[in-house]
Amino acid sequence: AQSVAQPEDQVNVAEGNPLTVKCTYSVSGNPYLFWYVQYPNRGLQFLLKYITGDNLVKGSYGFEAEFNKSQTSFHLKKPSALVSDSALYFCAVRDGNSWGKLQFGAGTQVVVTP
Amino acid sequence: DTGVSQNPRHKITKRGQNVTFRCDPISEHNRLYWYRQTLGQGPEFLTYFQNEAQLEKSRLLSDRFSAERPKGSFSTLEIQRTEQGDSAMYLCASSPGQAGSPLHFGNGTRLTVT
Image 1 (cartoon, one colour):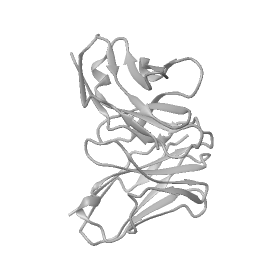
Image 2 (cartoon, chains in turn purple, yellow; image 1 turned 90 degrees about the vertical axis):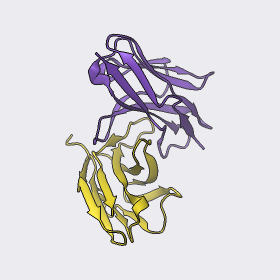
Image 3 (cartoon, chains in turn orange, green; image 1 turned 135 degrees about the vertical axis):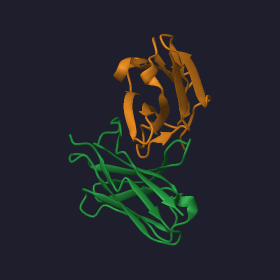
Image 4 (cartoon, one colour; image 1 turned 45 degrees about the vertical axis):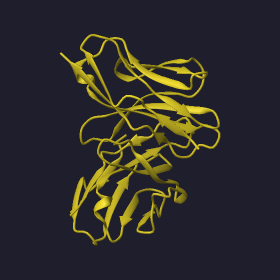
């Protein structure tokens, strides 16, 4: 079985400050990890993924994420947040050995204030 | 790449009625997924197809729910004898046939059962 935990329901940050959204996961095989963003009344948009290789992956809109195997974490980061980054962010995991469904976390609402 | 298309965008129905939703995936994608999302929650996996074969169904998918992908292209999700608890956003996603490929989501169908 696979699971994802996003411990923060909401993250508040001032524009220009660094943004971090936390994610930890549990999977029996190799983790395939993804971050998505969702704006109101829209579907999910893919931001970035970790499959293998470098632990720091870069994605769309200046976002990056760091894979930490020992801590089973995959935190999303952005060095300087924008007001337009305010949205709902989801972490997701797939078992790379069996690959079927993508399991999502409950989501973290990011609020960036001017 | 015209994206994943879902119809209708909104559906209001009375309890006990049947509803059907349609999803048109990105044309070259052979995997198609259905998820359900309620307010403030992450997407919950319902089922997925590889071509026309339905490979996995969630226990969330009761006998009242059925999904088809008859020619390996578009898919339909039918809910029979709708209940108020079925009110949610139903999301469709597609992906190519590689384990590390992200899912591409449509904008969803919002179902309201009165």
